[in-house]
Structures are given as structure tokens and as C-alpha cells.
Image (cartoon, rainbow, N blue to C red):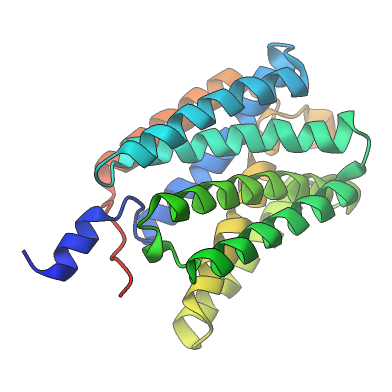
Length: 253
């Protein structure tokens, strides 16, 4: 086995293929419906739901860090955990603490930027392919959690405060992702910067799609059962994991 293949085998995060992005959008949509199901339908409230999801997130992160290689089901379960805890945490900050969508978005953006800055300053790179050490993994998952929480607040702000509605906001973030894709294919803009931009944008897209599925018809949603929508999304993700290739990211040199 060559040095490159050994390093690639040690990578525990996936390549950013088309399948990765499709599953990511589905996972973020699931995070919204499942988070709302726990906090609203089960009446746990934002704080209790956040605490419950945070425990699940912590357990899955520890399992991910202890894994000896990239395991798709474990990785995506951890991603889903970040989206659910991000949903309820953002709702708690925006609504229960009363800082509003704009305040929550600003606070979370600052925390995300701080996480990326500390990660780069500590390890020298924030590229996904460089996630090879335990220290880098911690930064990776903390950064993802902040990005998922930011995405929830940004999605709510766009749909509600900015008045775009759920579908209008979905089109906005969808078009933004198209622009990122064009920049990837047509320019020499940093691939790392484009990755994190796309990663962040998929979260508000999933948030508004999730809200469109389960919010009342009078509010512009379809008023579907949060539990049914979550079950369908889980099934879709499982099928996608079976049908779409999932490869470990090549290690950075």
C-alpha cells in the first residue's frame, strides 16, 4: 500500500461529491423537521430538546473520533445530530432569549468565524482533507455545529423577517449554491473557502425546506406531520447512502 493510500484510508470524512451535497441537504432538512418535532410536537421546549440532542451529538462525535476509518452511517448520523441540535439551539437563542433572528445570526456568524480562525491558527489548515488528528476533528465538529446553528437562524431570518417566505428563501439559497458551484468550476477561488461557503448555505436551504414541509398552511407551509416528514427523510437518506458513492476524503499532503 502506498503512502497516499494509507493516508486516504485514515481519513474519516467524505469527499465533497454530488452525492455528499444531496445527502447534506436532506440531512439539514431532517434536522429542521426532527428538531421541531421534539421541541414543539412533543412539547419538550427549545432548551430541553437542545440538551437532549446535545447529548446525542456528543456521544456520536466521540464514536466518530474513535472510529478507525470513514464510516458513512456514523458520519451522517453525526451530521444529522448537528442539524437537530442546531435547530433547537438557534430557536432557543432567537425566541426564548429574545435576541431575534438578526441578533442570533450575527452572534452565530461570529462564533463560526472564531472557530474557523482558531482551527486554522492551531492546525494550519481548515481544509476537510486535513482532518486527520483528534484536535482537527474537534475543530471540525465544533465548526459544523456552529454552521448548522447559524444556518437555522439565517433561514428563519430570510423566510420571516426578510419576508421571502419558505419557497422564496429556498430559491435564494439554492441560487447562491449554484453561484458557488459556478465559482468552483470556472474560477480558481480557494476550494476550501468554497466548500465551507456551500456547507453553510445548505443549512438555511434545508431549514426553510423543512419549515415549508411542516409549518401551517396559513403561514405558507404544507402542514405535514413532522414525524412523517422526518421518517420519509430518514428513509431517503438511508437509500441515498446505499446508492450514492461515499468515499473518504483524500488526505492533505
